[in-house]
Image (cartoon, rainbow over the protein chains, first blue to last red):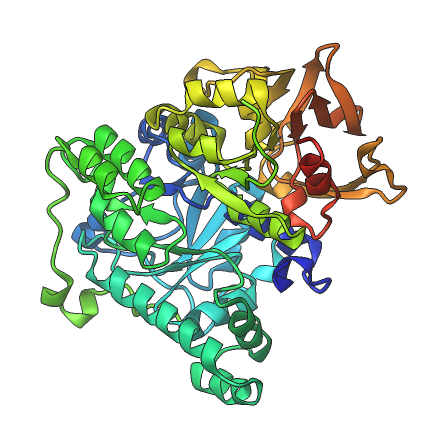
Length: 301
Length: 199
């Protein structure tokens, strides 16, 4: 049996946190801004919803400081659905996280989509009972977040762009680095930990497992069933769809189609069937035409 | 339908933690196969419906045309449901507001379940439970409850294998095994071994 789950050093709270992440595998987590959208997402088969006041594409448009959502708005969504409800906090803003834990959200996303509250440190997530998900662009960043206590990792992509290119870049980077780890000798892993800027014990665990020690999901720019299938085939165990659903012409059928695409990601016949008659996807913005200052993925340390 | 025992154990692989069940059966030296399409049920000797989200499983079972084939399978061959998988097997839900939540169970296991009965994720917990008969061993089983359902009523044919807090948490009815917790999230393989013994 894989070492991670039988390792007595894995403490009980962390087992519960990773356990919930395991239950979300093979699904789709959808951004919603009110109870009505949350019900549409649940009805479509979402495994969880991310409650936030503005979807990332609107955060891009309106600018200003993006903070934790109003608790009353999150509460209304919790009351409307039975699936897990997630919410975002600013990077390093542990007080926002304390509030969300008391509110009873099921997962906290310490997210680069919001304006960072700390330019050097992330939240020490082992201090919390509620599980956290964090973004990454590469293996070192992923293992630093797991070291701080993240129970789920998502590759960042470029949120609110509708352009899948950065999601692909980040997932390929993480998977390539993991494959490389599995080819190294035991006596080369410390040097690799130094190169990656990652905790040694997690580098060793990843090399043995041949995968991240916690579930590895994808986010940032997924807008179509084909995008979801692409990310799943590249190694994502579940996908987050932010702006891609509710910034599209007809959200409900698109949400249902992306749910099916995540399950049947390796069956092109099903992908064809679910891609029919979906209306217009979100318009989006090409990441390659953005200024560096407009990109969100660089936030996180 | 009487499957030869040389066939693999099936995992309903639509959504949820089926990989953890695969790892458990492999640790017991048992082959597994994933099931996503109706035709794939003919190639497995038993089936596990894993933990996940019951609203999502309902949607995906119906869209894949699996409802009828699953009912037929569960009449003849062993099926184990854990957490959301138990919910899918249950006769009915005992939720307060079922209508808006879009869960349609298979209705083969004679019990009523209330979803998320212990609260939200911050209320998830592990508790030692005594196993009756099952692998008859004095060691308590480390039961991991994650946003777990509670069995609130059950029929005469349902045998209780373990209880926690006055409610059954592991039940057996013929060839059906239902657990409100997650044995696949521990290294304890006794319940997977018990299931293999059911056919």
